[in-house]
Length: 359
Length: 175
Ligand SMILES: [Zn+2]
Ligand SMILES: [Zn+2]
Image (cartoon, rainbow over all chains, first blue to last red; front, side, top):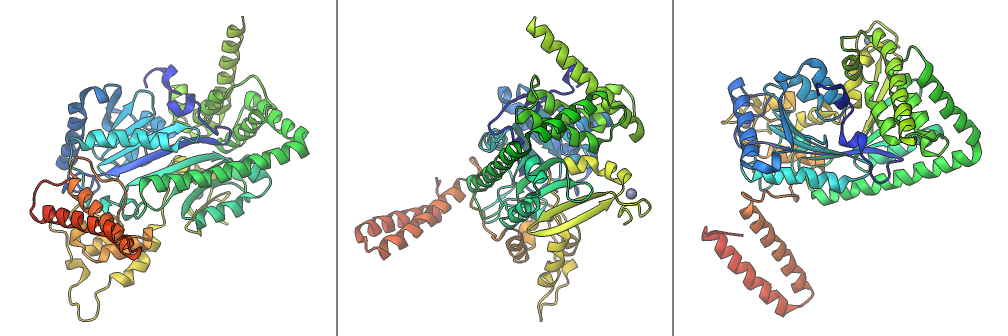
């Protein structure tokens, strides 16, 4: 983390996956707790230390399985370092900000995070690029099995895995899909779709700007129910519904492409121009421009770039990343100036390395 | 419209969440939205728990003739009372689940539409639960076979169930 080259490192940022034109990333997390020890928010300093030691000890006993992980107590990181991990979705805001004796086992590829003393004693999460829900589950499940081999988890015959919040009881499983839905939003089909999704038991989140525009056209859907369904069914439901959303988004993109190809190309080109030449840019504006640029890229209207660059920019525009790159704390106004400067720099680096490869 | 958070600046950012068909909206100014920014893009969905607990308020109240107050229903392990649980929406430890007794299934059914786990069972410590789940599955199968009048298969299942129940009662090693 100390080196600048590692700032934008992360498996979901760099990797590729199926349906990546619409699915930015998937995340699976499972919540687990130790028997009898109070949940972290109620635990004493001594108890949270004990919890950390038990879990770290269990990982140590599994030896080689955890050799490609880095162990990071939250206390050892400064505010910006913690926030960067949040911005890269490798740590929850709760662990970064609210935890006592919180700690993280981060797999070196950035695909697996094991959080200690979060809302639950243990949160195991895997985040992967594209629609890879089953793969993300397998990753998280594997580390659950390894740790369970050494620790007694709180489990009840009737209620399943016991968690601090009743909304996680049972499987402790929360699976989420981050979707880029510019065409459904442009064609105003989105609100009907989102309402329909929430009626089939999925939670839907988007960030809305003026009116009905979803900022960055990013929408996240996740399962709500964790009890009464096996993990396989929870994942299958979410995947099935995600596939329907993908096909609706793709057909909306085709309609747009057939009817207003020039308009879309213009929109993507303008986004490119602003991203490369603007001097002041809010994060909301950057999100919107990156979405326009991404759509242009996915429709083949913009060539010569790759998805990794698009994902990197999505992370790079966030406050802590900007402050890390600037090497100092920035006020919101200063961040709005730093943001386009860093975007341009990243584009320049990309073009330079592309030129080098061509020679 | 003024910002909900600071009540000073005009609200220009509107965050909408739809959970279970229920829409909740937040109206914020640019500055307050920035502060919330990280949370908005984070993956953890925020549930409107207060609403769930709000309706539980009535369900959780002592029934007629039941003289214990909610603050006296307490987990012997961590000390959390049921009244506190209702207020903060979090249990205190694994033992709270038995301490709060029959009040929890009601809440869980309200959230999940079910109060019984059918998913993963821990590999090392869960062998008895696995055994019981297998037994329950065989009993279901037995019912079906009897209905279908497959008496030979039913007899075989009945013997197997008997043997397994004996094993469970005997406290022997299961699974
Ligand atoms: Zn405000
Ligand atoms: Zn307790």
